[in-house]
Image (spheres, rainbow, N blue to C red):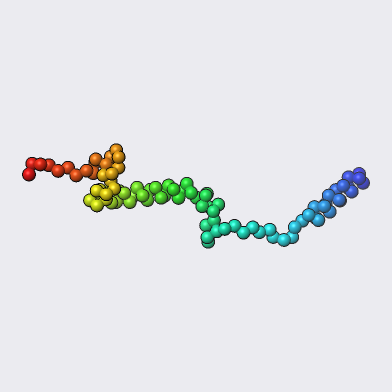
Length: 90
């Protein structure tokens, strides 16, 4: 019984000696609250919102002739949807 108490006593002292009273800090690069780790965690969400924004922008400018001629007509498969159809009946 006495031997078990000695082991327990010495293990308690060992734990107390290894106790660190200082705060361990590590500086990581960040911009405000945005760090590289946060950016990686939010990247799927940001890609989804970015893609939805681009699609919304394309829906908004789809009726503008400038965008039809410069952008939409050059899409390989569906570009002919925006091609100008001139009739020679006049």
